[in-house]
Image (cartoon, rainbow, N blue to C red; front, side):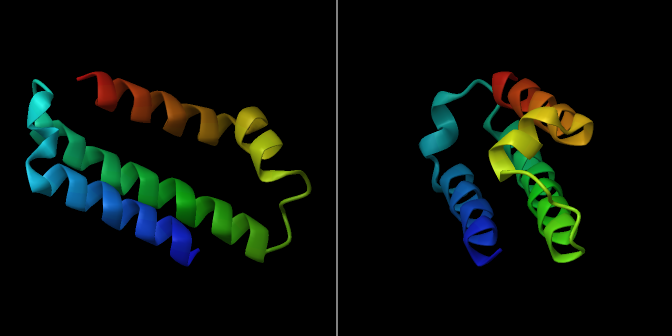
Length: 79
């Protein structure tokens, strides 16, 4: 879980650093942070409650909310 939170921190630091200025709307990249936090917390809660029966990659590719989060992530990155 800590590694997931650190990945969100690295994303936030990247957006804040100015390196994201090469994108047409770098401020829209801030919306990626809460989406990523939601997904990491959802995976962690399911695992903690004993509802993760598959490999996390298989779960992510077959879980409808994870697919929706992935689509939102891609759409926000394309903006």
